[in-house]
Image 1 (cartoon, rainbow over the protein chains, first blue to last red):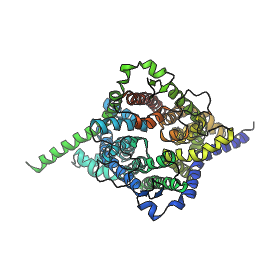
Image 2 (cartoon, one colour; image 1 turned 45 degrees about the vertical axis):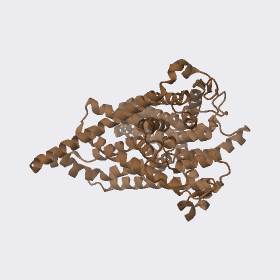
Image 3 (tube, each protein chain N blue to C red; image 1 turned 30 degrees about the horizontal axis):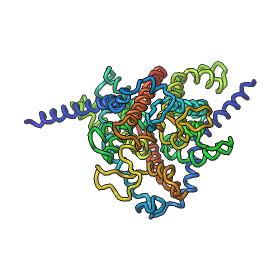
Image 4 (spheres, helix red, strand yellow; image 1 turned 90 degrees about the vertical axis):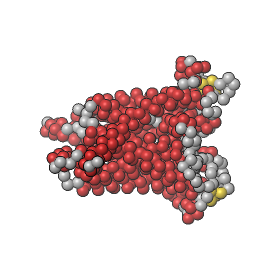
Length: 281
Length: 293
């Protein structure tokens, strides 16, 4: 075959494949917005569910997800950033740091439902936190740890070597160097990782199934030892477990969840591209 | 104490805390495995490992209960193979397009789109698959239910693609520019260069991408539980309902009694999943390191 012709055919096929990957995003968004927008109202977002979840709002699920996500980030960000600082600034390339890296790869690959089992075994049963916001947030926190560590590592590594050598040569200690000459420049990258972690934690269902999620709990949680409803689990419940839920309530719940998660991810994408664009070194 | 010594003491503590945080990620992996063992191991006091792995029936609440997970393993395998058959060619092709062919602006847009696809919560994808894909497959093949292994495969294919595309794209972009320049200088067209030189040089990274995509599919829980129909029987066709390892844990943990045999069996399934994904990720990591060299 004529090489120019075969190139044309090949490129069109590759383009088609790419469309197949990206198109579902558009289709899923379009379907959910078209069918769910009619459910969104002040009452839907800010009131309690009524009538066995068939009417009223989803406030406890929204708030529950916010609590869980904040808890997860409070736990994972300090730990994850410190671990990244260890890997980039302290460890060099010794055997232990390779072990840590392998552990992170594996943490990232553990199925979300296995995190759920782990959370049930350690937080709910062993530490006797019960099914509670505390157990769920810690489980989600460990799950997003690899996301935080990986992006913090990239951010720290992108800060040029000589920032450190200059600071050290002026007599600053190692920690002063990290604190004042490295971390500030890595901050946008670390923030990006944090937002991605938020989005991931907000959307996951399996880790909270046995650690915190309540099927139907039309009141707000009073403490970290309370169970709570959560958006993703609520969507699962009303779309598979309870018959007779109006269609637009289901799509509306999906729309709220999807909007929350996609906005977080969009923010991360924009922050990152700004960060990369602004770098002058 | 002088302020200098105070500062040194403070820094000593900070550096220890940082080292401890590094240790924590290793500790967590060990803890996950330990707690799975702790809760799951009691099953093997009354049940042999072979009966568990290769037993043909999963009747956890009958009397006596049967805890053979072969139907679940086959369910996971069938759905995963189906998803791989769809997502691997499409995902790798898209990675080639994005890395080699798409011009700057389009490239950034496509990458953002794929990141957003990766971000959609699995319960939302499951919901859409259940409501739109399910009925469509039911009508297309004239079968009694649209919630089948095939529905699961198609749904999961879309969840594997972001992983496959982004990791393969990284590997392709990392191929040194001289390779391309040498090929073009010898008169190869852009496509010949892409296909015969670049794709070949990026092969270890592409293998890793495929493995990580498959790892994601095996571990996926909510979407697969919502669209595969959840019948814990040995599947004979891709148009039958199946139940995967992950879905079994998620669906049955709520009904099991803490400390009972059923409860232990679900944790034992967790061990199986942990080991499978551990192996897949370990091997994929080896390939990734090879591709970086």
